[in-house]
Image 1 (cartoon, rainbow, N blue to C red):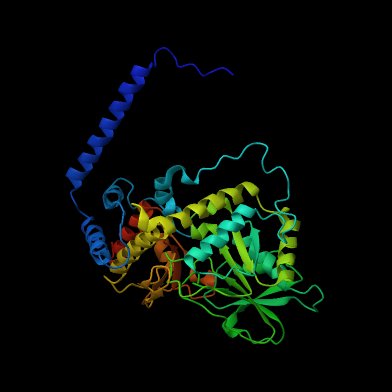
Image 2: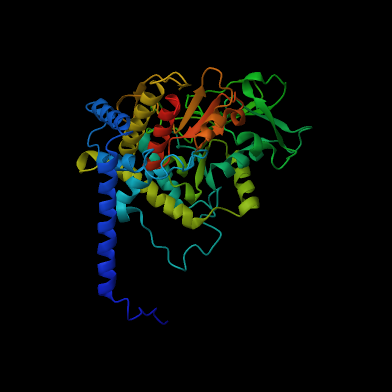
Length: 452
């Protein structure tokens, strides 16, 4: 194959000179903005970061590597007086977990895998397993990680892999429904519930199940399925089943039951529990989730649903996910014997810092309020920790009836409480975006509080 030739006028020397010139120009421009603009608009953010650092000292996590100088430079680059500072739309409607990119860049090649062209040709992974497309290596690392963290019972359970927890929710609804029922089984969840639950239940207009709304208001007799999300998306509170009647069946969505988000109190021990790689490690693009299922027949029906809809789950994604989960478990087991943080220590520190900054901004005025959480003992960290959810459940106080519209006026895209079965005075905002986007969010919320 022919190589692309470099034109004679663009020699290696020319490229080198051009590169140096561009870098010098960038440095001079940065110095110019810092000297001309000073520290205007930066003091609040700088103070909050200092407070977060001092508050963390001796609190929970040792060996913190939060790279504050890097975050500080991001603050300077996103100030309101920087070109385009408050004119850029920041979209925090989705929980895109790019917050974890820094950690995985630091990990380097530990999670790199090479998949030969001859591998993954077959549909089948393990024909003797109920979930015949489940890669053995992935299943092994799932069990190992839950044992390391202590957040789920896996012994005597069946693992079903899915294309994210979204597919597994549909598989679970299918598995818990009866094809011989006279009418679709009711599907409920306590408000505020995950905004996709209603559309998941009703999108295909299935004759097996149907969305029936807020579990707290559900009074229909007969069988039902309750979706229990804990910690809850959007408000971050721990949840238990609400209806608790004899003909109820339950799907426990524990996507956020990990130590960076909430204290781990005990291993979850439910009939059907869902987890996802996207919120565990941040690898949303892998599209991998798993269910821990107690009943063999339910596991079979879930597997059948995935077989019919996608003929299994990508082997390549499972192998990559296995490598990532292994790196997380290794980091936890080796944390005390090497120079470095575990994944959960690193993630906890970042979330703690962000919530500290957020509360400082919100408490500086009376326009917004946040949920309050009580600390609890975390078996993973071996001491008390506070919940620090993946989402902000923000309420606009006073005469503001539409919080989403208020934020949109300041170019912040969030999701209205209406989508969660709650008042439009609430919005859900992701806490999982990049450092730069988070600092922009803090700056704009502060400006709204000050009426700017």
